[in-house]
Length: 336
Ligand SMILES: NC(=O)C1=CN([C@@H]2O[C@H](COP(=O)(O)OP(=O)(O)OC[C@H]3O[C@@H](n4cnc5c(N)ncnc54)[C@H](OP(=O)(O)O)[C@@H]3O)[C@@H](O)[C@H]2O)C=CC1
Ligand SMILES: CC(=O)N[C@@H](CCC(=O)OP(=O)(O)O)C(=O)O
Image (cartoon, rainbow, N blue to C red; front, side):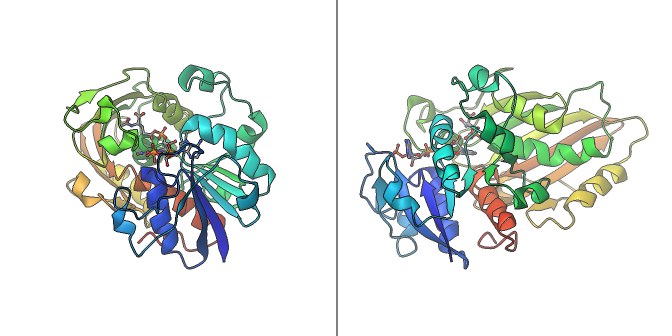
């Protein structure tokens, strides 16, 4: 049995990882940790005020620590379900110890000078690990993931945006003169579990935010090798991302070309489901590890709809999928 550590286990993504690992036949949980001064220190993850859904499933304590020396002996795999700067600081320690690290934050996703100072507010200190990190967009990077020590699991919006667009761009179906326009709305869990007025349920309305300034715009553009306009929205629901992506196709492209491109890349990919008619809504993916994609073409205007659970295909499920790929397990083990 491989042994896995989840850092940030009391967070929304960390708790989902704990659930998936509890069902995995080849990997077991070595420890669940939170920060040294966590208010949840010593509680069971399944306690009433944390995740009672995990009662009888994962009844492990949350260890509050910043010293991993006694834990690491026993660990093969580390999931960092922590905010970006915490992952940035912790990942090299585990990597130097030889662990395989799956980072759910943005700390190793984009290898561009000044990207972290501009969008994340810190100067990246670990260029050599940034150079080695493999972007964990699982359906597209499986060969590189198989050999990676550090897997940077994509952001929730970038997964919902890239999965529909990548086949279009790779097959040369889009008119390069027009940037795809991505309008995506996320549930409040996208902001994490820590309470603030911004994610207080009674305060949340529906609104766009970070116009022309969200850190996921450069992440999407970098990995697509195509500029895009990206506008995130916050919605008054718990979980899920619904992305509406409007593009201009090249003259002569017909609906069959779009469907064939999607099928070419996803027919054998169990976690991406293509709609042949109509288009998906959030209820088809809530609590599930899929990204569902539909589209409509009118003349040379293409609208693609993609939906996912931000905490699952947008975070924990994709991390688990990457782990399965990395260790040669069935891609969907413990996920479906
Ligand atoms: N929520 C989402 O939809 C998505 C999230 N992500 C990314 O995944 C990561 C986790 O997100 P999410 O689960 O929402 O975040 P949460 O805020 O819900 O959880 C963060 C977790 O990290 C712990 N933590 C904070 N500081 C430290 C530390 N120094 N050492 C160890 N643990 C620490 C927190 O516990 P405590 O503070 O008590 O120590 C908590 O368990 C983030 O990088 C986020 O950007 C990616 C895609 C989607
Ligand atoms: C609704 C909400 O606030 N969403 C977050 C993005 C989700 C996330 O966790 O960001 P990463 O994918 O970069 O890790 C935001 O816009 O900052």
